[in-house]
Image (cartoon, rainbow, N blue to C red; front, side, top):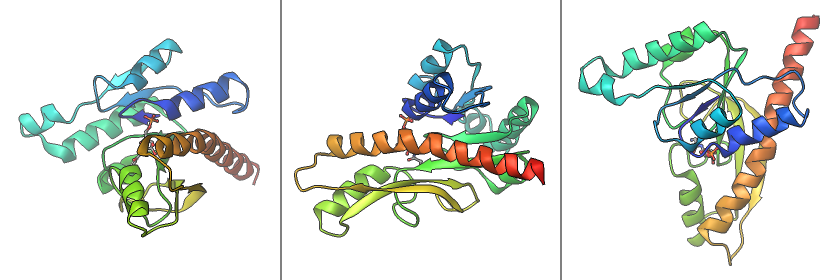
Length: 199
Ligand code: GAR
């Protein structure tokens, strides 16, 4: 699981595994691109190994973004995961990363397909509602391709918006749905793997 922030979606996966909702799943490692991500504490609390992989030193010493991605993919491939879940990972993964990585990569995005790609999607959706441009928003989990927040959708859900919403209320509603959806998406991938291993 790759994270950058609070890790509430990581927590949803941890809880589902501990509650036996996600059978035969194991989070083997958590990678964060931020040193102070609360997600790291959540992982440590459940004895999940973590790695912090910072881009800044690569920028400072001239190795650059491409080398960062290649080193990251090497770290990941050595861990031999079956699946990478981007759960609030706030870096765009390069085409080189996606070519080299040895497993599926899925991403959680707090908007519907084709809407509000990139950062601050929740805030931008909230503002768009205030301006009367959208009537609802949503969230999705999709396969990762080089285009940002695009790729085949695994699960999606509509999040209603209300006139008396605050950004905080809307964000909370978004997170509650995300926490269910991320578990569903991993379940679906597990089913897909099970079917292909039986072919
Ligand atoms: C989630 O809302 C997720 O949809 C968003 O980051 C948040 C992470 O929350 N991801 C993106 O915006 C990706 N473009 P968390 O750290 O509490 O799981």
